[in-house]
Length: 390
Image 1: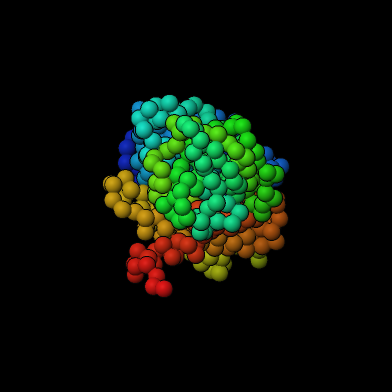
Image 2: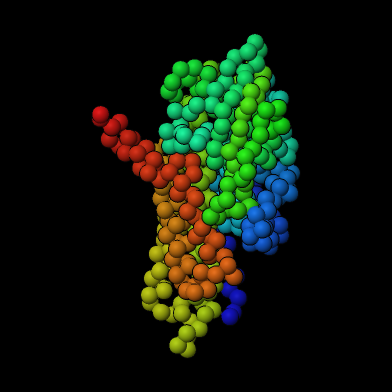
């Protein structure tokens, strides 16, 4: 079967620096990530050395201030970098998105002293972060979280369990949302917790359908002491901080979804143009040509949607509704495109000899994380029609 190399996505980037940045990412992808992606995912290996390389290359803090080690890049550029990484391996692309999410609270709401002390190592010092909002009994209803932080002099004592934590057990720091006051959203505060804090322990990682190289685990907080200097923002401000982070994080998920979908389309095209049946390539048959056309259209539409939302964010305009739309559309598109890619490959698509079955398994989780797509529809509807009446 002839080998058809995928063509790089033609990107509209705002500066020459951004074009050089994407070229650097593509070089790292081709040399360091793609060659071992399937092997490492199958073995459940987390590529910590890749994240170290990305940090050394200035790629773990792209949307943040260069004063603290960031890259001063707009979200329009940062998200396209995520897409390139996710197209090679979702464990890496999503991992960078989660790390950025974990940095958001401190970068946006921390004091200058906190930022100067912690952000340089978080953004460009080789550290890896995780974000702790969900719990075993509070997923979509995040405001009902039960993990408590109790004031003890000039420190806080955190007790409880967080669930579904990407990088759980391997992260160097955790942005943790805990209850410091009464019930509901107003009683929640954000904290920056070191990964080696005494009393912090991970459970056995979850056995997942996809993204096997990315550890997802519960975290147990058994009287973890955190100085008040690691409280982020005001007491009771944590839920607002969390929602702000999730608006940006949803754009990261959208970009990752389009990366996975693009990788699936590339594989389907390579197979369809090389596979011969009835004396000609199967790409000659109208049924398959229409499938490929629909796949490509969904990818282009999703990319345009997440970039439009990113440009609103970069301009300082409200983008919550558009972020929810991008997360919803892009992840649904990724599920459809990857499923169709398996169909294009037929029986081969159902085997682990080709990567499209992995792409399909990975696409599913993107419809769930950082707000299920049912939650995204609720967010969009509230923006359109106002809160639900009871």
